Amino acid sequence: MGLAVGSALIVGSLVGAGGVWFWMRYAANQARSSAGTILAKAEAQAGALQRKAEAEAAAYLRRRTEEADQEYQRLLNKHERDLARRRHEIDRRERKVEARQTALDRKFEALERRERELGEAESRLKDTEASAQKAWQDVEALRNDTKRRCEELSGLTQEEAKKMLLEAVEVDLRQEMAAQVRRIEAETKEVAERKARQIVTLAIQRCCAEQVSETSVSVVQLPSDDLKGRIIGREGRNIRALEAATGCNIIIDDTPEAVVLSCFDPLRREVARQALERLISDGRIHPGRIEEVVAKIERDLNDTIRRAGEDVVLELGLADMHPELTKLLGRLRYRTSYGQNVLAHSAEVAHLCAFMASELGADVLAAKRAGLLHDVGKAVSHEVEGTHALIGSDLAKRYHESPSVVHAIAAHHNEIEPRTIVAILVQAADAISAARPGARRETLEHYVKRLKDLEDIAGAFPGVTKAYALQAGRELRIMVEPTEVNDNEACLMAREISQRIEREVQFPGQIKVTVCRELRVVEYAK
Image (tube, rainbow, N blue to C red; front, side, top):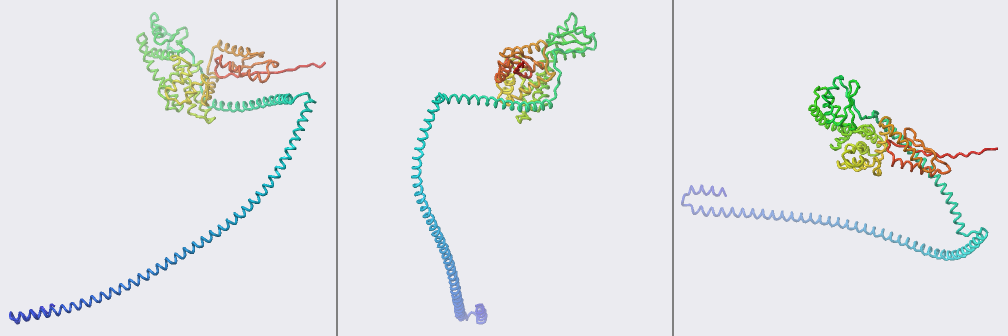
């Protein structure tokens, strides 16, 4: 087409404007020729494309047909395999059903045979039962005849003979039971005493405590005897002011370079001692100065009490103690019981309780707390009505101590019955601490009266010939008349005497009650 246009331009330029029409006809013919050529080519290409598409479609159809045939063959093979497997399973189940049916047939035949055997056995049993019934009737008749003949020969009825036999057996069994009970009690007491002695011995060995008892007087050493006159003051005004401020008796006698302070309240006695020492070191002794020093000592003593309570609590590892209980424990430093310092006694009891609880596998912490707080009621016993054990339990309950600790405090002097092992341990530790040598003291009159009371209590029981209080009143030995008191009554007497002593006599530690029964038979050969 480009060649035709180029030729037309050349011809046009040569011919000019006159050959335009010729040129246009020529161009149209060329265009028709080119269009026919292009159309023929397009038709040829379309035919080729159509033939190619038909070939590709035929190939695709053949391929899809082959794939379909293969899928059909695969599914057919799978179906045939499933069908064969199912037929095999059905055959297997049919064989199993046939086997079960055969087994059931055999069992049914066995049951029928067993039923026939049972019927035969039942008939034989009925025959045997009838024979046994007849034999039993014969035996019963023979026994009745024998019983009648025995009654005629012995002159006793059956009930009378049975009663005599039971009485004889009862006497023999009672003796055997009493011997067995006594043997078991003896073995139990021996084992318990040995174990208790071992535990208490270990606890005492592990606890070291002072043996010096407190007294009701304090001695203040003076640099010289000249200070006695200054302490007395003009017309005794200084000593009167000191006694009025402290509540203690100031004894100034011929003892060289010493002043004695006498008071049954250790707290007031301690205030007077510290005040007098401070006045002596200061040198200014007059009523105004005395009142000032005593007031300051009392304030300082409250801090000392608090620190004393904190020290003993920290020593025992009980840092979670309530501050008010700690303060009350500090006040026990200036309380005594039979001359024994109560705070030191409480700490000793806490140690003993902890040692014994660890040996027995009990709650060591609860035992230690109960042992330390068991006498806390003595800190306020002069301010509150009631026994110190119940007061102490109320204080422990008020300051959120555990129920086991509260119960042990209330039960350590048997105001209530002890129900826990911690309460028993507190009782034992309290008795050990109070009974050790040098721990407590008492006046001679009270000591003699206690011994006499023990002997009088024992002598009041019937059958007692002699009673002796031994080992400083820690053992009571009783001699009984063997013809009036047997062994069982001797055991009962020992228990009753110990219970009466607990009710009527005040004593530290424990008292061993021993009842001795001895029968001597003397004969003379002539």
